[in-house]
Image 1 (cartoon, rainbow, N blue to C red):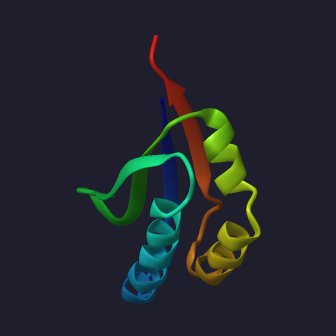
Image 2 (cartoon, rainbow, N blue to C red):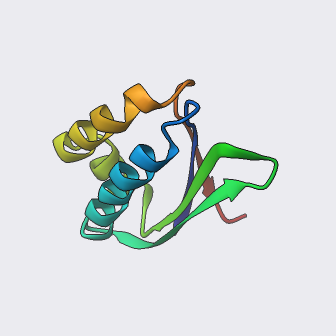
Length: 94
């Protein structure tokens, strides 16, 4: 199993619009093959800094979702609301 950390920073005043659309991304990921679990957290010191922590069965499952047309389409809806590029970190157990 791997853990993926998706880090996004939302532009001022777009938080509620982002929340609505980002939920769609997570809902679609839940239905993807290999998705195990996920949660979204907000930086306690910067409410526009968001983290999604997702557990995937394998890196191949994550790659399939990451490169899917569905994810690209959904991400294109939230990308204009971000004031920085999305950062992704893939972690595995030692």
